[in-house]
Image (cartoon, rainbow, N blue to C red; front, side):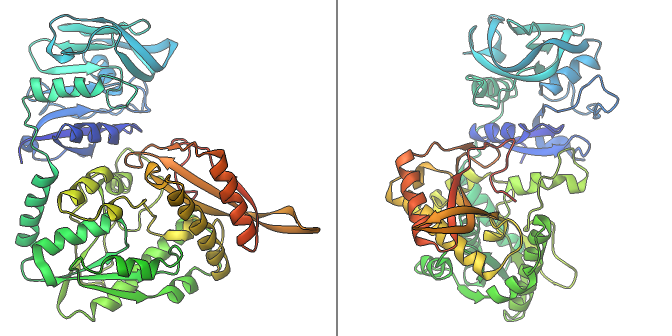
Length: 510
């Protein structure tokens, strides 16, 4: 494939959004750490430099080798990328005297400039930087300004190198997608051929070639990612795919039976394995969130190792890893972004487990996984299912895990999720769930004083989980759900609603 965009990550919280916006243009993008450039750049037709929390003026300024890119491929610097191109090419970057963060409007746009085609003065953009470009390098042309930022956009003459100090990838930049389209389609001449159908055809062909007639084990969760991965693999290898759905004792209420029933009629070869006691025994007494995740990942591997011996000549383990999992875990390999949490399905397998790994979705964002599933005819109800964390309720129970706490949270969660469906709110929410907090609070039930658990409800709206806003659920709904939880779930006497957005908070509490 020689129609890809390379995005070099300097550590910005928005880097993944750049990748998604490019994909929305039906152009394939890949994100790589700035210090791990691919050896073969011939596959990439254009390059984008991301933003960064660092300053080009600092001693820790990242300084990639662009000798095989600059002037040889269309190049776009965004925010830090724009300041980097200015600072190290004869321009000057200084600390801004005014706070350049938030919404701004273009006050000047160069006429007849292809980079700003269909983007005029007054267009809203999003700024997020403490430094600013005071003087442009020689042999550059100013393309756009805002009231506070004179050098909002510029280009180098004689080459297809552009730079902007605003973020076109965020929704607040109203014409940001148009700017990216102008650069990629009209300037870099990239073809818009990245579609769900094209991905399915290409991936199925690659799976057939890679796996051949060998057997694959796949862990199903009932969620979107593993289900789409299963159907893709089934298209490629049929009955050689052996799906296993593990009950880790941390699923939602009745989920083990419901998920197995859900897969009936899909033609998949599915086996249910109840390992709940095994997981809960290993988690007993453990409160640290990261240790809980790692424990669950380890036991998953042990269970799959046991099951793999029951599938004669199994050679592969399939996983529903998606692109954000890979990118968020990249710092383990020396990338610039900080790892917020480990992902139980990223990082390979231990030596004792003699299975090769296949991850058919590892280059897709969440919304793309759903579009691919729809193109293969997967049921809308399954594709619309809210994301559910791999470690399950273990990271929604703050503190140690006990069967009693799991039972309480399952009941609370069921009331909340069923309530969302009954009130026709489920499909308006990207993800929802309940958290069991490690605190007791005083309450009064009847004439008696109680000292019982507090639960937090969480509902967010998002596209892919990279950023998320809390959902303003109706007060009447929250009142009804709160009353139902307190009246119907013994051990709970207080319900709170989480109104934190991501960032700074994460979607899950652990």
